[in-house]
Length: 266
Figure 1 (tube, rainbow, N blue to C red):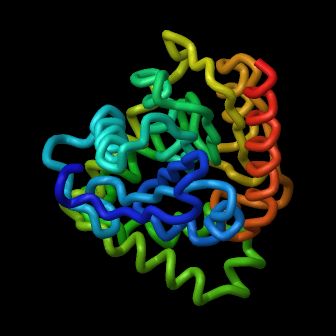
Figure 2: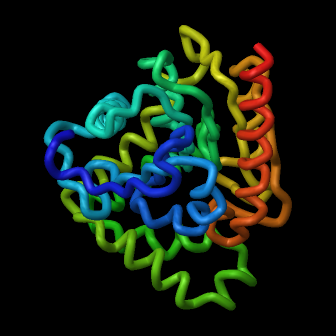
């Protein structure tokens, strides 16, 4: 494994592998509300993407392919032949790229709150945020992000959680953050209508109040992956995995159990 990749390897080492891929500006610890529910039945790998958390800065211009190469390096370094990918937001984009680039190594996909083709207005807005972050760094966009990511009652009643997420985002270097942000803004074209198609068992999940990665996007992703399952949570926003972990974890566990059973029947 390349130097400079920060990761965790926990859970049942003899069990099937789940690899968790976090979203933009976050880090491997965003999965702390998921890991306890899965560690008995799975081997769990979490890592910081290049330029995030405790991992090194990207050594070339960031792209979905660069992050897939990092994922491959993690798998090779830990002698993991095949894994289920759990990707959140940007991590879901990376997971879809991985399923196209190395399908023989991807067992299943769980895609959480991740994007499909944006409207022209939404695309303009995200590119403006990229430009703003290039000028001013992550602190220019973090407060607006918290408004988009959490429901108002949760945000108002959990200031310590807001401080935690704020610290994560502000921990990103100004010189790197906008380059990673640009992958989120411009990387979609290469994973829409995937060719060759994604064929592994897949669950797509989002929340009805996730205004940047909402139900219409998740439906479009699911329609492109034959046999995929679609879950729309109600009353939650982008960071449902943190705001209401059980609402996210249980559909994931159910999908993993069903798809494992179906795999045995094939």
